[in-house]
Length: 445
Image 1 (cartoon, rainbow, N blue to C red):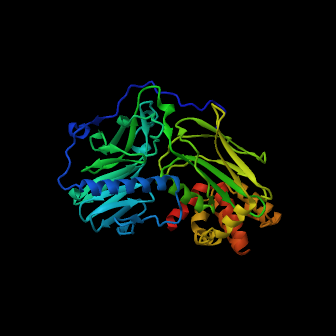
Image 2 (cartoon, rainbow, N blue to C red):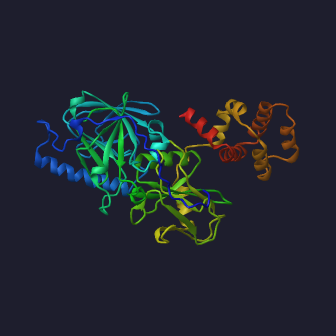
Image 3 (cartoon, rainbow, N blue to C red):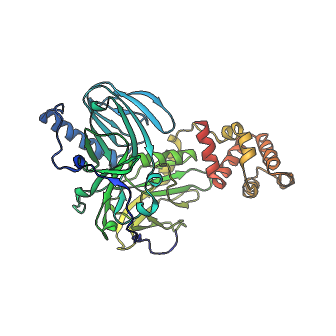
């Protein structure tokens, strides 16, 4: 991030998205289905739903199964029928409320129903010029939802991360965006709760929550946010990554997965005490005067699956505690702090799952790496610095005539040196070409 003031500039364009707002969907007096749950039972269920959503946002855990749904009695009652990289088909066997804790997406169903869910990206469906326009703010993830039979679904609960506590946001600003063949169709939700908006008797499409707000007020929108802190253990130089993101369970799960690909371990930290401001910049500092790059984080929203910005710093062997602080750059107020002790790193490293092996990855992807690895100069320097390669071995690789022959010579040479050498090669490749490593790991899932 450069040193410019990090305030988002308003677009001067008056261009509008193609949109159709059905009269029936914006009416304040939407009809209630005769099959809705009775008032007393519904009220009790509503209170339970609200409390669980609050826990989901503020106490996000990593110890759940990703495809796990909470059922009507708090049990895992949904049956996973089929799943692929971006699509889940589930069977809800009985009437009641179901919550996908990994995403915050919920359903109230009248009867047994089969639901199919996929994920979308705002940037693919809402042009960047309009996405950053002062009147529009993406307020949660996009889901492509279908149901069979459709009439079995009484409500869909679409998660959002807008803070309603301060009273600065009018719930009339909330709209559900449906992306259909004719463009973006806007619908008012039946009601808006602190962590989700409700569609009663829903239609099915690619859908998510948008805020349409008055000109000049976007930067004052309060966002329920989280600080995510990961460390990458190493005997000589522990590395940290710090993310500032909206409290979107799906987004946090995607960051967890991406960090896990490179052996990052998340430390348990508290969220910011107060909701933060969308579009504002926050300064990151530490008590040990370690170099942090970048020193500022901007609170913005990128869809899950897109590259998320973070601050990075190295802490050597971590012999002393480090205090991290995040302050509002504009007002100079402290918004978050935590202390990381050497014992936290030792405990986290000991408890972190060690299911992934860089050595196995390199061996299994020899041909792919031989064909795809680009410039080897940095990798060769890393391996020489770590005493994996002697000077004459490095020169032997460099003397190969083609890029692929250089790659093959290096891979074959390192494989003969054993697992430690392969782990160091994997670490170097992860640092030098993270996109290639991430791509190859996706192929092996």
